Image (cartoon, rainbow, N blue to C red; front, side):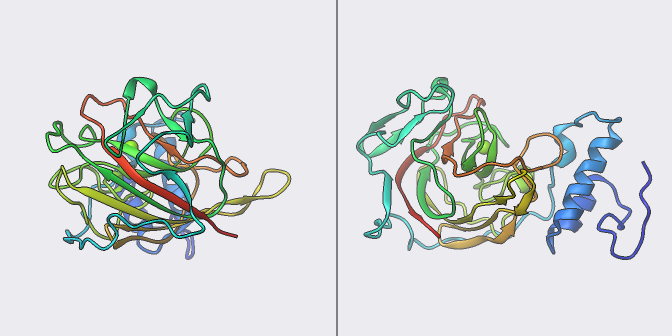
Length: 284
Ligand code: MG
């Protein structure tokens, strides 16, 4: 496939694959990212979905910023819905069958049961402000993506990993592709900083999610946007998502309404993170 290179063509850099995706990410261009990823997939052969490696972006690795402690233990404002206060999982269900969540609460923590699969909120949300804390076990093992991998799907659009994933991973001195590290919008947006704390320490995400909007016929009216503070450090600054996050191929939208928030039980063999202190405030 040979694209025309004209001024204003978001694909006009002429570079291929990850390099071009990287160029796209600085001034974020939906059209650019979408067309590059689509081209990468097409380059693998016709309508083939491509390989996972096609959408990994390893450079630039964001600067390491040692965070402060301001957001850890942030108590919910009066109008927040508390999704987990350390005592029970009443606000959560198994994604695959809607039954009571197969994870557990102990010692003020939410304990992941990978065998039970992903869990999601009983309630559905549009746009919101979210606070969530997570901790990689001190004894974590593994490397790259297989080291404490989980994630927050800011809107879940189906079972499995459908939706928009804010990645959770041990990214403290653990190299992986930058658009798949902690604080990334998975395979879409590299975080502005690596504000990871070491395994064994609690970490916090504070998220502002603007849900996508769709026309009655299902066409996209306005894309999703997200701002993320990771341990109080801005890592996503009003990023406009080009679609749902996907492991292989190009992001794209499929119309949906209000949606649950989902936590990932990742299939790798390393120990999962714990969660605590999760609360949300709906936004107009
Ligand atoms: Mg993940």
